[in-house]
Image 1 (cartoon, helix red, strand yellow):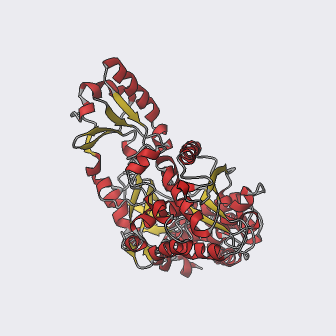
Image 2 (cartoon, one colour):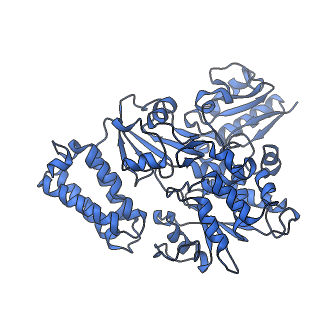
Image 3 (cartoon, rainbow, N blue to C red):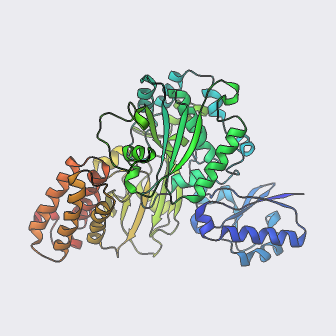
Length: 518
């Protein structure tokens, strides 16, 4: 009997030795005459357990981890191919609490299927959304997405259905679907995980988007630091073309959609949609003035949908199970689920897909297990390097767009970077300004010059040079950047700076709250 053994092929697992473990298992199985089928799946997102090996048994998949090559012979001795007991035995994968408590919709197949197998994808409800979309009018597809309440998962949270409706209504001989896969925020990896672990769901989502707005060509703009994602995407695109899910006549429907991957060059600002379009056209990545909106004049001057990876990957389940069903998840105007990413000083780092509305504290402690050092968590930065630092007193806030916004924070791409009580928040504020100075495209003065002056002001403050005056200067500088920058890079760089100043004034050498000191 052939036994299926699953070992992740994603970059996080490979960096922890998954390839070596796979080779060791194949060697040991051959030496012992055991017949196995080695499947390179995606990671389940529990990184402290990687490389995690799973074995298919009649009771379900049994997990072992973290496995090192030296453990392999011992695992065979323990009869792990049949779920045998061993100190690395984690029980049934689906019963691991970190995983069992999640609400996986977009990531439903990640870790379960062979990422580039069409047959495996179909066997796990893949392409059901596209099948439904092919029976619908473009307007009905857009209406279904609008009903779902899906908002851009890249950080801006703009309603996806409204964006699609604008492109649908635009008149042009050519329209495009562009996937923003330039995932550059610190502490974020959900885009990478879906592209490496279930690239076909992104391909299906982009195909549905093309049908919805009348676009026949799509591009995935991929950050250069994701070579394994590029391999997985191209393998999946080739498989979809070969089986008629992409091309000139999708499943005999007469509909056309072609898809290609384009690799970026590593500039953070190319995560901004107009810079991305400039780069995609072969130009230097610099922000465009708006209007016109990309939905009307985007790639090569044509109407273009620019959506984030998770936004597009969430579309298939909406078209499969209905927008109303997706609406059932979440709170307020934040509907559906979001893959939260836990990084930094956290005991159990990884990915947690859950409906909007759970609290920061639940995520940090119920899932994350507190800090890795065991010390109190002092702050968490939410939403990437331009996100605010949230203090412990706000950890009971629910994770949704509106509630965080009311507290001068943002959800962004769903990444959380954790810091314990040894962090120097003045240095973290300085990092925020320095990051902006390094990554600025240079087009607008508030971002280009303001960020450099911001670093200098913070340095003077830390050195104790007329601190009250520096506080006033820093706040005025932040106001200018907030209101005068062309894009979110300069416009949001003040968020980490001001949040650090407001919540942790003592780290700047200010004995009183920063406002009073000013």
